[in-house]
Image 1 (cartoon, rainbow, N blue to C red):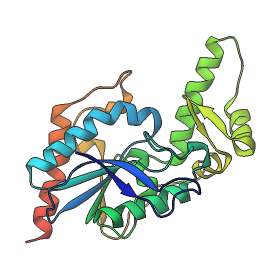
Image 2: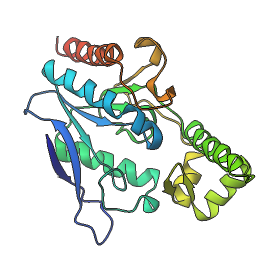
Image 3: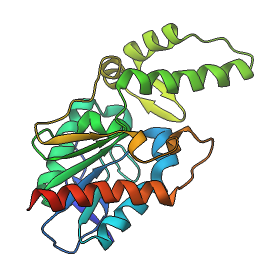
Image 4: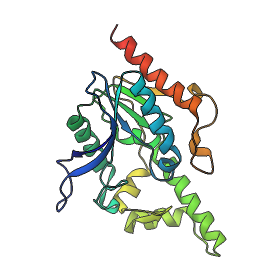
Length: 229
């Protein structure tokens, strides 16, 4: 199901409506899904939806909203900050009536602290930034150009930076240098080792793994069942 949610904190000049993909049957358990970012989002897109399908079969609603500047959002990505995404994630949770949150990889950096839920293979800002800059420096080298991590970070802090096709503003580049995921009081970590095999973000192309999707959905469903006993 594709619909929209209203973001009251949207940038001036925009309606505040953002797209959302969800399995919404009005059930008691409603999981806000905050996906991986940038290139990892592409590699984990099908996996994320497969987890949501399995939650639907288990009787759990799941809701995957676009945050401002992401996917089909009309708000410029370059204007976003980690704080703006945190505010938007909290607004999405309220607007969609979420009872829990599943944050995947860097999505954990903006997960609402007040919601119970899970961080799956949470990724820090420095690791995300380093991986994206490394990809840019490799591409530059292949094109006969020389760029360094330090030089690109300095440029990003001052002017913003285009990495893997995404133009990030200076504020978000600076914030990513120090951003670390933090579990909320009722949130738990699900490491990749709990799913078996390497993470799909390590593969060269977008892919899926039915076994890993089964196991992640099963962990969530079991946790929810135990919480209502």
